[in-house]
Image (cartoon, rainbow, N blue to C red; front, side, top):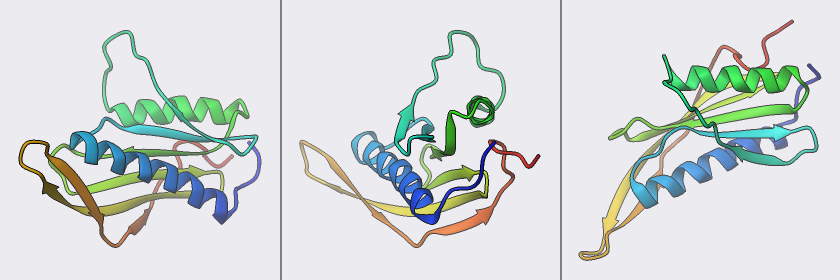
Amino acid sequence: MGGGIGQGELDRLFSAALEAAVARLEKDGHFFPLIFELRTDGTIQAIAMLETGTVEGDAVIRMFDVLRQRGEEGLIRGAAIACHESGGSEVEVHLRAPNYASNIIVPFTVTTRGFFRRKRELTLGEFSARQAQNEVFPAD
């Protein structure tokens, strides 16, 4: 499965997921989970999952299953899934690499401006991280 990734790559992957989450929250006030992968060439790509049938169970677990397969095939070196519960005031980024597994909680507050054309602006709070199971790159 390959070795781990450096702090710089983890930071870039986390930042890509968080920036996309903030943009979706400011635009729409909510979002479905967003998936990012660090590819073997060092690029970070947002990916979309198209489900044509009924999805059973937890969508994030299904995303981890897809990412795990991509990791086993040697296509990715890291992954991030940004999640937000509707009406909640925090984003959770599930950050995974062969040498790293953490869920980073990012609290935020929303300020709304404008009367006719409402505009949301997020202010991020202090991040906290929790160690997590590595569903994408399990230990051999």
